[in-house]
Image (cartoon, rainbow, N blue to C red):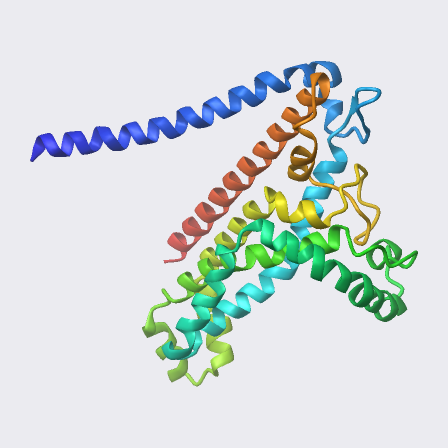
Length: 310
């Protein structure tokens, strides 16, 4: 029995060590191949805005801003919908919640290239002919600061762009966020619900003040999972963002993301351009790591505060 436990322990230790070695190998390869770009451009590579293979001038800023913008749009659209779906599924009877849960989970099984094709042939024409004119003509009446940038008052655009990519990403991260939220909200002790109902609380008050507050850690965790998923998405974004190597000029403007740039250019890249692409990959990896560390830090602080309150 003791020998079996020892073998099991060393097997688990070997698996963990292998994962760390793979991660170290990825970081080493990215660092090694991106070294020429860092040596040539220095840290100015991070805020450079040019991407011109003819002059070997490369900068990461448009790609970083495009990645952050599409991710932000997707989360703004997906978080309220995911929370509403999760709350609805946890409150309705099982005969209705189970098929709804399966339908939402099926969205995660759809390949990203299918999302991209659907976006290209359905969403892009819809955005060009219906959504963008509607937003410009209705919300454009409200003269907000930066309204031209947000609503495209200078033109509706082609249907491609950051807003369309954000909508696609929102559909893709929705099942991940809602699944985590749903599982966490279902862990609310029945005693808390019954006590709240016994005090005369309505269903809305119980959901808002008891269920949502109890599961706040899981809700935030689900949001960060969706954030990490949206940052690295490639194929679906590639179909609809327009692939223009420029910083965002508006929600309707075409642009690019780090992942889309890597997919578009890596096959033909050589020399300094290839090194710059490796540097972009390293930046994306560090962004993902930062999100993971931020998630753990936030959840750890939340758990510590709950412990102090109890």
